Image 1 (spheres, rainbow, N blue to C red):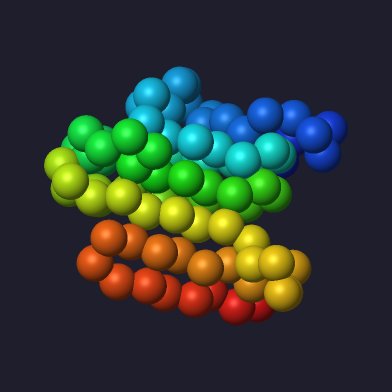
Image 2 (cartoon, rainbow, N blue to C red; image 1 turned 30 degrees about the vertical axis):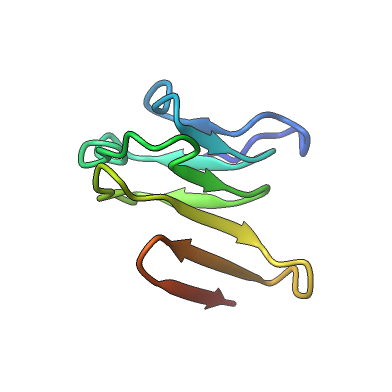
Length: 93
C-alpha cells in the first residue's frame, strides 16, 4: 500500500476509478479490488471520505438510498467520524 507522495494529491482508488458519487479527499487512498463491489447507492455524494485517510482492504456495502461520510474531526486530528444515514461511529487512534 503506497500513500501518495505529495500531501496535496487528489484521493484515489488503487484499482481504478471510484463511482461518480464517491468523493475522496486530498491524499486519501482506498485499496482492494472489492472496495466498491457492494456499493449500490444512487444518492448524490453517497460516500465522502475526508483528507489523508487510508481505507485498506475495505468493502463499502452501501444500499441504494444510503449516504456515508468519513472525515477527520476539527477538534482532533487523530480521530475520524463515520456518519451513515442510519447510524454514527467514531473511530479514534
